[in-house]
Image 1: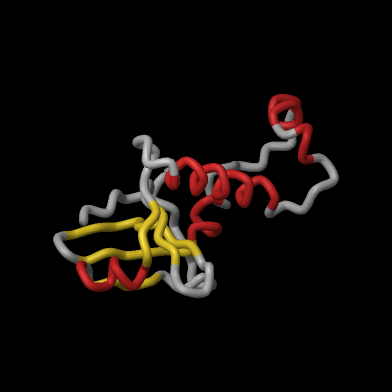
Image 2 (image 1 turned 90 degrees about the horizontal axis):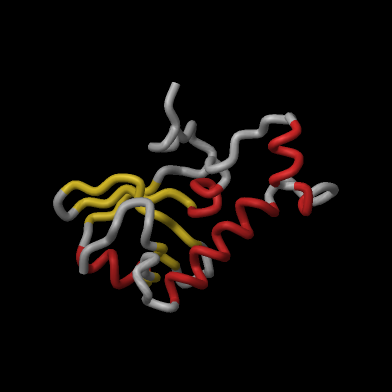
Length: 113
């Protein structure tokens, strides 16, 4: 089993989804996949942003990242090179897993200052 950082999705028995944000040897650091997905979009209230996300006008702010996560999950289930879906219990048998608490300050690995 080889977990790919920021690509594979890991699901626990309660239906929570995680993504690895760091891997070193047989150690993985996971964060809630929704939290990770919420860092993909930078809010810029300019015309380009408004056009790109026009269909979301009037929606909850979490709808865009949830739709992105759902998309990634569906494609990972197809096993066509878009990542894979793993069970947390199985992953924990192969890796020492640590979690970033959802309310901790989370610095997304893609974020650049």
